[in-house]
Length: 439
Image (cartoon, rainbow, N blue to C red; front, side):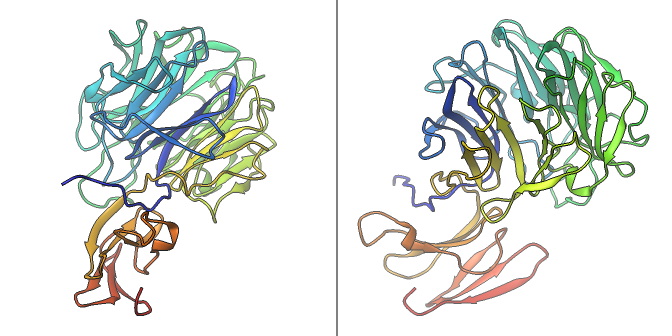
């Protein structure tokens, strides 16, 4: 028996995406369960990388500014889910993704962010969340000065609190902020249980991550905090910091103009913060243009006071990451539950997500067609019925279609009558789909 890919040829959840500034058509994408992918034609075609390592879940990725052939990937997704996929540490590539080497931190399990020193590709910071379902000491911030041969834990809060996001001042690279998050998942569905705790907070380093000090800035929510997203703009003189703060009271979009000493709540829209997203991207050519990830991508042109939705459905929802080329700001790449999409014109148009077979499927069933058809639900992309073989030698788009039901659970055809498909979904309901005979 040999495995073969039957599709469908559409993308699934992408957790992170980055590009190469000097090569504006070259981008990398990290899939929650599909390894690393690369495009050299701005998303028209994608090539699978890192497909034979011991971890397939990507949580963080960074390209060296001084040597774009060097990439670091942190494995294990960082999301509030009961079915979260774990990793086995950090991987490094020295040949633009052709080959990879695991360089340690295997017990971190879930990595939220990676920072490479702009002048030294061997100096790297890693934000590690640690075990999602248990307490462990391998949480916090790690630093290597030798390309991953050795690591030092430079920030540890406690065995329940991990590091989830970095922000480095573009013009003062020694000034770095990190978001710490007290996080604990359970093996049952606990979407609506807040992931908050006293360990969550913001820390600051002024020496490139060697030492850290907690920011107890005036204006931040007083109670226990949840997930925090951070960003620092170019032109902020090392003082401006943006933060999305999840909290039972006082959640929203915050701004500091004095390096975190004081904060101001600029926007309390609930769509701007949650334990599920909380990522911020600032335009490299305008410190007042800010993007916040969520069910859609929100954009502000006045430093966070007002936001509009700039990208959403159709064509994507649940956006987790946005990267903007610092040398060519009209070139961007987004990572969403519908894979990665590239724009070369500032968001007017985006590349297709029907060219990355990275979908996550929950369960499978088969009918008694000849050739038989397969049924499943794809995470955040609906349901699929797909032929196991196509009439033209390949399985094409005409050989698969949606079949009612729910993305999360079972899609099962009735034995002896595949025109009837029963589906189950979140909340325990059952649905029935009737399709034309012969389909």
